[in-house]
Image (tube, rainbow, N blue to C red):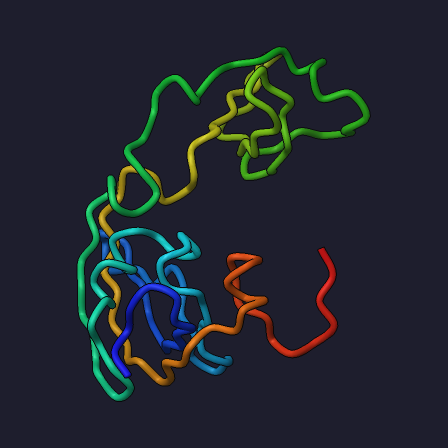
Length: 160
């Protein structure tokens, strides 16, 4: 069976950023299992996997616009340190959920200076091309329930 929309796909993979640094891998873990055609993984990888079958290897570089998007300067801003009420010490690398007009947004602290804190709402891999390599380990038809919910069920009790 070849990978197509409505299939449950299992892959082992490794992903590197533009500098060749491994940012994620399934090594030593179960394969990644996802529902193809339901936007469960980044579009560039999903498109590259279409048509492959069990045992096929893949090696693809995905451009930023087909991965986590381009870096958006508008998602970087400086806010007063007192906006972090209840936090004893705000430090670079800390992650918070900010309430915005568009809903909650995860932000990462990138700089702390005097009374201002710079936060970045971009995904950490935004603006980066990503290189994926790996192999397809399983392809099967999705169940009616998986199709209805838009994601794979592992067989454990599933509650929405």
